Image (cartoon, rainbow over the protein chains, first blue to last red):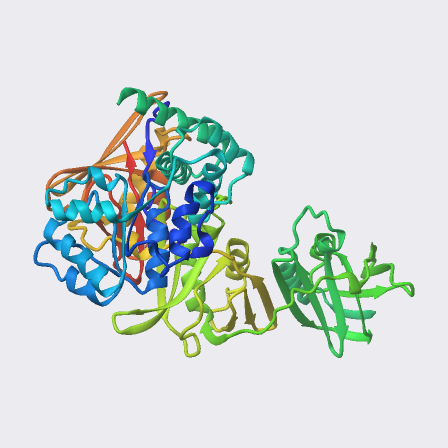
Length: 229
Length: 372
């Protein structure tokens, strides 16, 4: 990227991503996870883990399920009341692989969920076998959970995701521009988020339209970053 | 239709309505102004399908009727007629042409049928309130400069108007931003505005409205719904569509904890910014402000032409700080300030700066820096 001598820093307004069931992008990669959410409370087992890469829609699915099941968010840390809540109502534990948790507390949460028939949904980037669990009983409980995987995205999903990410920012982009990005981007939903964020930032900073030139500049910049990592 | 009216009345009303008409139109009727005479007045209406202005003016009506003629053409003709003259407007029997006659001048304009003229159906309004023209003008004057002109972010192409509780009082608030700076102004919320939907008034409507608010004694009736706004200013009725978008959560970009206060004399500061920025290029209008105790050094470096520096005594009693801003934005904001001194509340070179007008507590400005 050609560094401009002076760069206007834009105001950081942020945006609210659309997280309703009707906003969910349906693709084959997501169908198993969507079925799990849509079929609540008829789950194959009371503990379900949705595993998928960054930006694959885990939190979106979890938020739909939370609404539908009237679930409460828990953080199973030592001394928390997570197990008590799990005895009373369905519970949601997000980003299980990245949030620290106490083995014994999570073990009690799962026991209470099974005993009282409430339900536990966890989201994670890594499969539960890779979690740093030392308590053998918890390991066996996690093995017994239903794990639903969200796969890597195909072109169609990437296209839909880019359009949604732009639309979340009230930016309505030409389909040809989205096609141009999809053809050249890294095949991941995380990359889609980074690209949209960067294009939005640069366009706002420079006060310009979303153009192919801008997209190409961002793709090149991110490509260079990857190569230097 | 056959009517006679004073040139000054006709010109004044045409001046208000004809500006709505775009110079280039693909739909011919949109180039025209609708003239409708009835009783003792002539009503003029112009629209671009998003904004409609109607104004009535006294006329001697020999024969009532309605027609449409090219708006800019009629305005130009009336403008060139001698001051103090009377103007006769008369359509022919077929309704295909209208004569404009005054003194020895006579023009014939082609007409389009009034039945083809579009009507911007207002629908019903959920809220209605009366606001002093001076208050409405203040809200516009303080914020208009920050409206975005970049069409991609259509939701920033207007002024966001809504009611908000501030310091225990309900305020009617106007906010505009282009993503680089933000302007906010408040007036006491008039009765009837409570609970009104937050609306985004388009740039063109704001600009036309501002020109109609020159009489400080007027009171404006404002009616709003989710999709439209109608403003009645004396004999003028302005109806406009609103921008169908969500205005960003502006509160989160207004810094609350900036602790470095800078006090400048507005005029000297603006003049210094203007002087040093003479040397800057069109593409990069950055001016660097280096602050140290009691002093500001303004610097512009343009690799193509040279550099400029100016020193200015200021009220500043914190650690030294260097921060860059777009010179045009600094000038835009200082031109809004009415007091002699302005207060800049700074945090660091990458964070929003808050600007307050000591003479107008109800307005504030946020300015994002440039990396220099």
